[in-house]
Length: 395
Length: 171
Ligand SMILES: NC(=O)c1ccc[n+]([C@@H]2O[C@H](COP(=O)([O-])OP(=O)(O)OC[C@H]3O[C@@H](n4cnc5c(N)ncnc54)[C@H](O)[C@@H]3O)[C@@H](O)[C@H]2O)c1
Ligand SMILES: [Zn+2]
Ligand SMILES: [Zn+2]
Image (tube, rainbow over all chains, first blue to last red; front, side, top):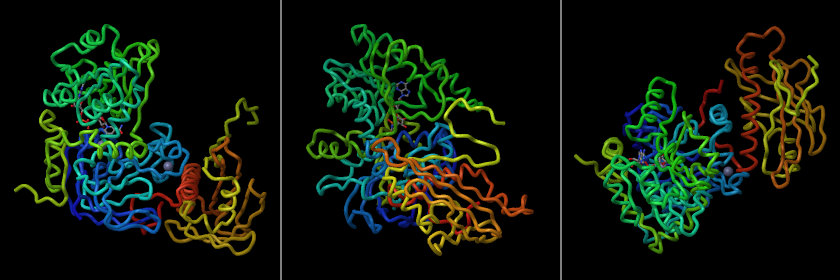
């Protein structure tokens, strides 16, 4: 089959690779009909995530048709399914608590050692996201093997086209969980750093969950414009002093909840970012954390900090004093997709959530490498790339 | 050497394998019963190809190494139902092998705590050869991985894998 593979920093290619096979009783094989490029894929593309190997198949946002099932799969051939990017067994302590992204069993034992070294615990498996998280081939491909297919994939009813439901795989539940983690109360203002796909879904979700006001922060006018369409007030961090503006927009209190939908590649010519980048490029490796530092400083006393943005290592000058002295509560993590997907599918079906506004580019799988270049370098215009394995490539 | 210890942490040492503990989300009886049937353990234990149960206490082990397969018989020397199993390779085996597992109730609602201590020693005079390396390579890491595979098999019904089986023995 054809698949988009990683070969190094800023080097992804579409290669011919062996077709996936059923390896375990609960597996299924899916023929992919739509698959997206995520902001998380850019962290791989930019070489920030360790334990990638040349030839690894990328992609963790995908859906398709069931073509083969293992003896313990409950799926049926021909069903259309969206697959959560988090691989979870459904039966361990964590899965029973619905902390699916902490599943103890999905990551093969040999791949858990590094997580134990880095973070104290082995990581849960994700599709197409380095060997730290299992080394599972991803879904930017014609076919993919899906473990635990009896619990993860969600079957899509007829009549809901791919583009409406594809984002149930990751960014919609991620934006929703980011807002859910803010425990929004009446009158609350939620500030969202980053108006990429995750931030934009967080904006929409925060309103659905009862936010009085949402303030969206970015520096790309087109992305800010999309946030404004959902009713957010916008703040361009290149044009305004973010901290001062936020104080003014919240009656001097600061936002009740702050969402970091930026992650470890924070943009901007800020001194702290520059220092982080110099250290990273000289192998003193820290994540780039301007947005995170700023949001902790801006958050109101006793407020909530929600971190869907991905971090992988360490951060210097972390404002631990502000966090403690102001009594902030922090919630974070890879998304517990399986916990949210049923409700979100229902809301999509009932037309309560807009899931297609985001897609700016539809391309053939063969044109995937160009999709990465666009999504990385033209963030203003390019808000989401969906790859279609069946589509004829552009000449 | 015999300093009184000031904490409850498990002892670790350079030469011996310290016991390693894992929580398995199944009742203690079920975990014990699964383990007691050694023929269940081959897919779980590092480099073990097959374990054939010969009688109530004896089993025959086949283990792959870089330069061939090693075989021996093991005998269960302690068996306390739902609590503890210990075994050793029989006298004259190529490889001196012994293991102890204990089973305890985890905190309420969390299943079983299993602690394992599994050692392989190359036969006298073979230290330094490939077989010695195989059996002594970071044994505590191997035990940790063995228990994770056991946990996955008992909780999720299968051992996770992200790639088709490799025909070469793992080193
Ligand atoms: N927790 C999860 O399960 C999960 C799932 C998906 C994505 N993510 C992570 O969420 C983050 C966002 O993903 P995305 O797909 O939206 O990515 P993206 O790269 O498209 O969007 C990031 C946005 O942040 C903006 N930004 C950069 N620096 C900023 C700053 N200093 N202040 C304000 N905005 C700034 C960028 O301009 C961009 O629009 C990434 O880190 C991604 O890895 C996490
Ligand atoms: Zn993603
Ligand atoms: Zn699990």
